[in-house]
Image (cartoon, rainbow over all chains, first blue to last red; front, side):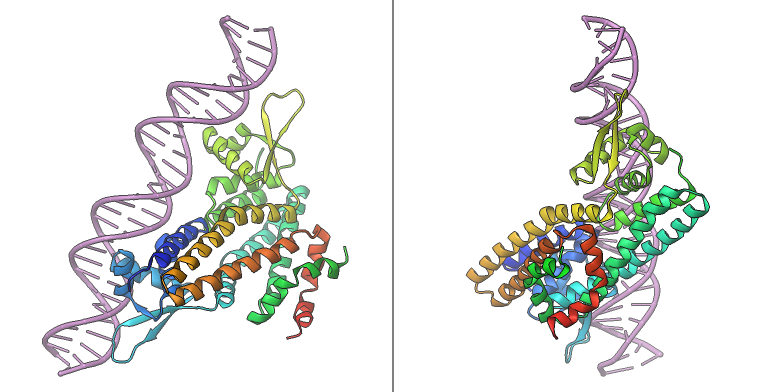
Length: 172
Length: 172
DNA sequence: TTGTTATTTCTGTAAATACTGAAATTGGAG
DNA sequence: CTCCAATTTCAGTATTTACAGAAATAACAA
């Protein structure tokens, strides 16, 4: 797997963006590589292409599988595992969002609820209010996403195009 | 500024969440502290409350101001700068999203466009397709957010409640 | 001006994170 | 079973990032 100038640039940039969102650089680079790869790659191919250790690739692939955005596939007559990523962008986005919700948003809401209860017991009215507003915001955000996420890829695009209508729908 | 059990727990958790989204722990903790503070705080108060160096607070506050979610305010008869954060959760969310869009999404789309052009020149049709799909997705996401972000806080809540209607609106 | 307090910048250090290479393990194939 | 390729785990190292404390600067008061 040789990187063309375009794909190389993409891989580097994607890795950089990963770090800004709390994703390990190599993990993000591997994802980028698989995203533009014409066929599933095996670990050594990835290691060679990106110039990182084989063991590092192994760990990173586990991470990507944990996020649900990379799957193992098998190639006839080849014992090695091959890996491919979700190519549908909307599905990819959904998968990542689902996972971040599960790992970060939901637990945060739970903690916030606990804090609100404690703040109430402590008679700390201000914190109680501020934190419950925050919890409510995150919950309505979650609920709304839960609806939108069900849309098929085409529906999503349509929703984006209709953007302007949303304001009118609400009616100020 | 003494932390109650509830606010202490919140500050720690918020700091932890920050790191998961690429935000420095101390930066996120300071934000959390200001979020629940009953009045604007000065830097030393923050340093004492969180148990970090005064200089660290200075840098972190600059960072938060750079994100636009913390503002300096002045207190009569006090030379020191005081700091307060945006308390309206919807406004806070918007501010952060606007900034992340400007810093990360927009530049990424620009790079993707460059990559697509290069891939075209290279006759790398697959990469061209995959990357332009990605660019288009990010652009429609941006455009859609640009619409929703104009909604007033109440409109947002309404939209969330209406969630179920979206599917019908699109009509499958 | 000088003294005082607040703030920022900077440099060295500490801590956290990422990574490599070697060793151990797994899972067929013969 | 034995052998061999593929994969994972792990311990040590390197790199990056965060941080404290000192020094420098700024802002004001007297």
